[in-house]
Length: 131
Image (tube, rainbow, N blue to C red; front, side, top):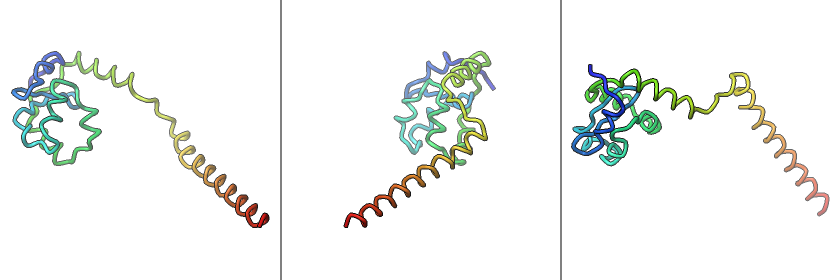
């Protein structure tokens, strides 16, 4: 299979020739545009670009992922793979440590719920004593 640069891909951003980079693979989606469930505009908007994040944000089905193989024409060159990884790392949010994430996932909501319950009971108690 051939390798292409981001510069090569960028030249294919029109209805007559539309390529996408998804997970470092190069896909010629020109013949798929009319069949695309989201419409051809979605593909044209991403044409000639690295589109992995947009592709994943949509949540494509297993069938869609299998269909992609039909349109794959090559892979991104190693130099541009490195560029994409650097950009992805810079834009990535730091992930909390495993223990920190799991602790805050239930402690904070529980504390808020207990606080709200306490305030509600104080409010009710105040309402009944002032009546």
